[in-house]
Length: 88
Image (cartoon, rainbow, N blue to C red; front, top):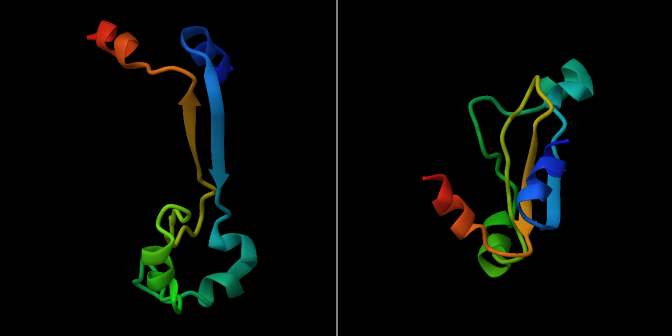
């Protein structure tokens, strides 16, 4: 329903949604397998890969234990700058 409301203001080009399953989905063993007090775990060669392929890789890593978050973005066919300025 929200996308329909947005579409009435401006034509939508693309909608992107990512969902992340909580570590609790793996049960107690899954929670026990993660390191404590670390937001970004060490993953071998990851830093090098990001520096080489920065335009291809978007990383979001957090220890999310009890939630199932989602993130999203909307790309429009035309700029919204004029419509945003009208709201001021």
